[in-house]
Amino acid sequence: MNKPLRRIAIFCGLLVLALLIRDNWIQYVRAGELSTHESNRRVTIERYANVRGNIIVDGKPITGTVDSKDPFYKYKRTYVDGPMWAPVTGYASQAFDANQLEKLEDGILTGNDDRLFFDRTLSMFTGDKKKGGDVVTTLSGAAQKAAFEGLGDKKGAVAAIEPSTGKILALASTPSYDPSSFAGYHDKDAKAWQALEKDPEKPKLNRALREIYPPGSTFKVLTAAAALENGKVSDINAATKTPEPYILPDTNREMVNHARGCENATLKYAMEVSCNSVFAKLGHEVGRDKMVEMAEKFGFNNGEIDTPVRAAKSVYDRNMDRPQNALSSIGQFNTNATPLQMAMVAAAIANDGKLMKPYMVEELRSPDLDVLEKHEPEEMSRPMSPRTAQLVQEMMESVVQSDNGTGGKAKINGVTVGGKTGTAQHGELNKARPYAWFISYAKTESGSPVAVAVVVEDSKATRDDISGGGLAGPIARDVMKAVLDGKK
Image (cartoon, rainbow, N blue to C red):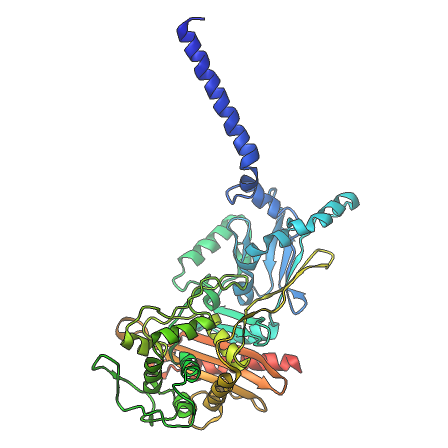
């Protein structure tokens, strides 16, 4: 063979070798990755080839499956009260993938999870069609309905937790969307999706878990706990030696109060009427590092809180100067929190200082109802001593029960309710319409069955009429009442 032919033969041999290596790499090394890749249409076709399992609330499915009459995608997802439950379920769409519980528990719902191998194998012998398993949630249908209807046409969110276990009882977000509207693979589904994507109100945003807001005066319960834990206050009925006006440290700027009687007020009275000066002064006295430490015990600055849907990170700045820390101590500056985070704060206080990890999946079940996995409550941290928690409870209960208190609209006859209002300023020079907050818990002889956080991001009320007690308080009351009625 002459030299040119030899070179061509060697070159062709190298090409064949490269092709064989590449083919084997794809078929064996990357087989697992490619078989589940989101761009692999076979994955989506297989996902909707069988009846999908359900997401369960109060023992009943809030999802369903129908024949989609499509040659490729046999079954389509349906939802019961889709807009109300969308922040919990997320969506499962033939065209646009899935999110939240529908995505995170897809293996169970489709029946493809390794734990369902026996069920799949058995169906091959019995001739039964493959079916997905169920995801049983901790949610209360009554509490969710109260939260969703309470928000109504207002933009906002509600999170409710059982303090003793961390079970999430309600997770509402408005405006919302119907996951059924784009569950298929047709033009009308694409149009519905595009309309949601372009909507400036962001109905697909889960505000209860994924949006952060300045918590305003609701954060004062955390500042009070920090002051008590660090020995800056020992008697909540003693004068705090707060001047009027109170000048922010290292500045000539006065802290503005929107309540009367804040000069030298007791901590209990300052909580009742929400004195900014008292809590800004206490936050400064506790100091940034100790305030950060307390906030982080409650879950702030933690970007890995999973419910199992991951919540956005709530923030208490670790690098602030002294005046900024004073402002942050009343829930302003760049302090931000999700509604879930503030429900966790209220829950830890109601649970005598013990914070339980929040979760909303109770158990995973096979198609024949065998329990594959059951969630056990897990302690997350202990931000404060039982004694401190009880003192903060006393103050929060005074916010609701006292004639001076700003939270009177959260009262429930025959039930002890603790709460804290908040009206959070934001926007350039604080000119935007404020956020209305309310955090609370209800307490019976057997303990506290529910803690709630409500934020109303926008409303039709005029700026001067927006208040946590007026807008958010009644929503929290109705959610608590729904939980209490379910315990009877």
